[in-house]
Image 1: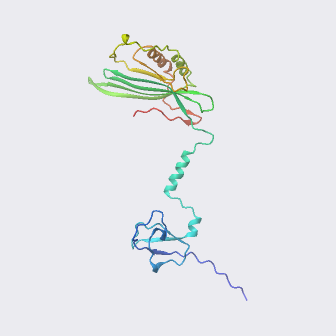
Image 2: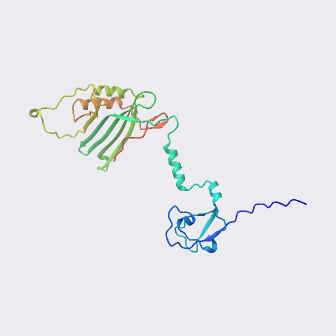
Image 3: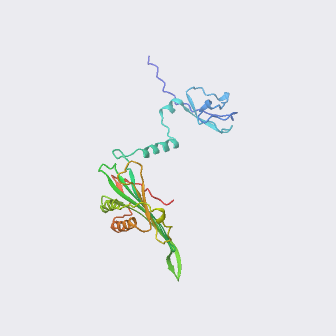
Length: 269
């Protein structure tokens, strides 16, 4: 007698039913009946290992729900758009292996603001040091300058206003004049304030106001801050000489260290 033939597994039965309009709104995380969506008794599934997707937030009598086996839903990885966004965010946030983030620390700031007769300047130079590039300290400078001229273009004896914006950088490793200029700044003799009897009122001028700020000598780490400002005087002379010595060092190409491009610290608000 031949042994009885084994029956092949019947294909999974595809079950489709319709849902009644729920009396109460389903919760946002409920699936199947867990969300409070009543099923028509006439169409209750014969299998208990079925999973109902999605939650019935707005099903009506004419909207069918799709049933898939619960065991199948556990085996398959389902990626939703929300999961894709989360994964992309995590990948961007993880730094490249072996490349710690480059950090710069501001040490000096130079500003030039003002003018007159329709010609104005707004300039900021940020001088910073990088300590985490694996090669000791590295000095850099970033400049953002905007020049405004009420008569930038003259056509048929008529003036048209205009402005010019410059955003550039200096790499101190390629421009030793940057550190030399800072050493000369430390040699400026700082005088005290005038007493009341020798004080004078402000002056009217068309010269931009120069301001230089940084750390006082021998007071690093103490939170002290020194600012020198003026229309004329030693600090203005120092910056005029520094501008000439650094003129060929500026580059509009942003700096990159260790394959990482440094983010700009300055912007016009």
